[in-house]
Amino acid sequence: MRKGFRAGIGLAMALWLAPPASADTVTIGAPAPSPTTSGSCNSCAVMQFASDPASPTYVVPPAPAGSSWTITSWTSRGGIADASAAIEVWRATANAGEFRLIAIGPEQRFPTDTLVSHAVNIPVLPGDTLGVDSETTNYDPDYGGVAGDHTFLSIGTPAQGQTMGGTSSDFMVINYGSSRLNVAATLTSIGPPARRRCRSKRNAGSTRSGALRSPRRRSARSTRSSGAGVVAATMPPSWRSPRRDSRERGATSGARSTRSPLRA
Image (cartoon, helix red, strand yellow):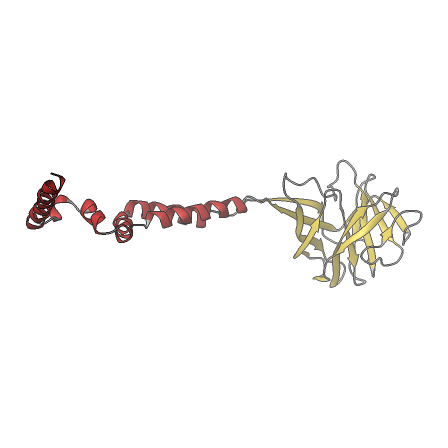
């Protein structure tokens, strides 16, 4: 019984202490280098429209099988003075050149010419594109890139759910060439294997409870339900009283001798 109990406990503890599912992480985009030299922009929504093949990508890649991406942090460099900004996520629509604002992060601080990372929690889909909203005048949303890099600057400040870039969008844009977004984002994906571990734990619990049952207790329960005749059958021979056995044999032989004359 003790071996079964220890085995059940050991299995349950191994499942309880098992490490969580591993997380995949990837970084997209790139913050501005130091020193900050570009101009500043107040209440400007900017997104990376295109990237040169030699430049960092700002587009969310395909997620690992059975999981999805979440932006867990983002990094940017402060401008010519202390400023604040918010990360944005844009998604292409069915209209050519048009993007819809899917998510806006909280307004977060960036000291002068300082690279800072902030934690966020923004679910995204493959194909989504990074953007940024400069909340104050001193923040630089973009910096110089190469010929294949293009950013869209919205003429106005879109709200979540609104569009820009298309002929019938909510906002028109200015297309800046050789321009990169001053943003990098960390994507994190956690797969679903934890549920299988919980089912194994329940099985381990049933194994442990079965190991705790005593064979003697099960015999005792069957004895109480079956009567005194079963007691004699389950007790070892050494527990029986010789005097009682002789009386039982005598009573049996006496009963037979009594019935014999009646049959005659």
